[in-house]
Length: 273
Image (cartoon, rainbow, N blue to C red; front, side, top):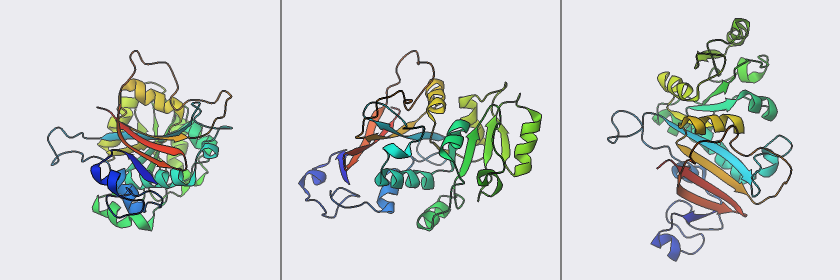
């Protein structure tokens, strides 16, 4: 893996594989510690720099060159082993993984697992052994017999609206999930969802989509960062883009924070200015 941006003088003069800043040398696999340093969350909350954010929502998505976020309904066919290592690192850094109900069904979500490689860092950051998973669902049409709800290391959260069916809320709670109301009607208000998660101590947020949910976060103006893998593949067809839903009135500008490359895959990190 090699770093394409930001470029420093040291990046330019070192030969591949020479020691230096994390991952500057090309031609070697980055360690998990190097990936964690490259994707670290900003300092959050009281006691940090003046004006520091209280909560940070980042998204992690993959797209082909022609804009497809999935192939045959899943993201795995357009991904790569390095992309999955970054995927795992981002999860290990997060307090909670926020995901839409349809993505849970399509991708066969399971509970996030504790990883020994990140145990010390998570403990030092005041985090539990594994991130929680928060499922956003209006209907609560979910299979509560799945391990995601019955046997996670950290109780799975379900974010829904105040008008959700009481029997479905009861079924979720009976399975062991924690239901959080984040909307006045049937559905979830994206900004309220972020505030609700922060209110229960989850401030390092990671969303893995799907496209409809990411579009809602973008439209609500609450997305702080996008980690985007550009896959050197073409799929044609009518697959969804990484963010769906109605267009925003004015395009939302982000700035490039870092860019990595391996085997033709580009791993960009973009943040709100």
